[in-house]
Image 1 (cartoon, helix red, strand yellow):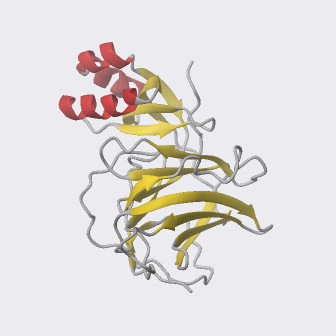
Image 2: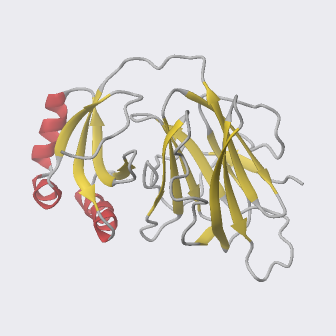
Length: 260
């Protein structure tokens, strides 16, 4: 049985890979399907679900030859004898690097371990990374990082409540356009939240990024030219002194790597 009444949002990963998003619910977007019907698309921007107080209980991956599937399974709160909904969820594709950001404001808890295996993507041909980010006082967030250009099909199921993400290879070829990232060295535990707080105090929009090994670092901005990134680094001298900002060249499909 499937169920979900949606609209999608582009998450600046925010707080998923990327990134960090404000807690406010976005307005508008496409309706999220409640059944599987091969609605593959290169880009996603959705929001849906009405439930609150759910627990993210498991994340699992499977290979179906022509496509791969990631399933997020949830446990409904105790006051719901039988869940007829899924938690509030927001999904969005982002670029530089290419990624799918999943933000779950309707989930207030997460089981540990949440992944169905220690290396859930060990045999994946299409995905290179899958990371759960620290909520930092906000929403639970998950980032999926493609190994190649992908298309996405997203829908929901009930009994138990699940979010299903199918990915397949895209026929399109990403444009070869490089940017310059102003970012930190890898951040650990409380450093991640401190970085977001510090960028907010500095008047810039910091986001959290992950590499394929699951390490997390902060990004202050993405610039067209090296000098533009260098100038911003000079302007943010206090932030640079605290988090050692560096400038790295990055393509649209290039997954961030750990430094140095």
